Length: 229
Ligand code: DC
Image 1 (cartoon, protein in one colour):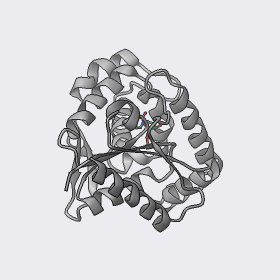
Image 2 (cartoon, rainbow, N blue to C red):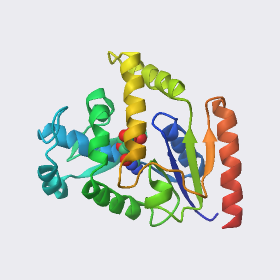
Image 3 (cartoon, rainbow, N blue to C red):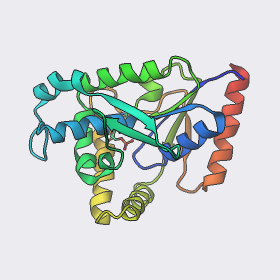
């Protein structure tokens, strides 16, 4: 069967990665979480004291960027894990410290240029599902299927809150809500590759769709794109 590229963009905590993983598993495609790559660069910047709440040493981060090695690897159970310079950081990149600083790092054109290049290489053979903010607009503007996901800010904050709590993090709902709305704002208003819906994207508002309804709808889109290509 012909392989296609599936680009999934949208607001934070709309369930992009859950959908992307499920699609990749069903179709036998590679799954790439591009947000995890921006999070890994942010963790690198924190660990090297290039960034904190009050300052960002752009120049230092940019000159160190070629020394950042980001790799997705499967563990023994088949779960994808993320390695930053040979250290496993899958949980660390999901914490509030990285979440609160990542949009500053993701706004840097030099960081984006470097990660977009890697992301395009991963999609050379097609058969890939990638989720993020600029996948259908910048990384793969010719992707056969583009999906733009959205849901109300409250629905999203509750989902993120439940996810963090289930991992044992001490979290405050208002902080999570604030983090989501301020990331929406930063992601949509930054100069380089802001979060925008590609003209040819299918919009998926899942505030009221359940998991199965959403998956069936998207699989119908996939089938029709594979048929056409
Ligand atoms: O999908 P996420 O919440 O893990 O993404 C983390 C941050 O990275 C988010 O604030 C936006 C940014 N990002 C981006 O700018 N471009 C992407 N392709 C993916 C994520």
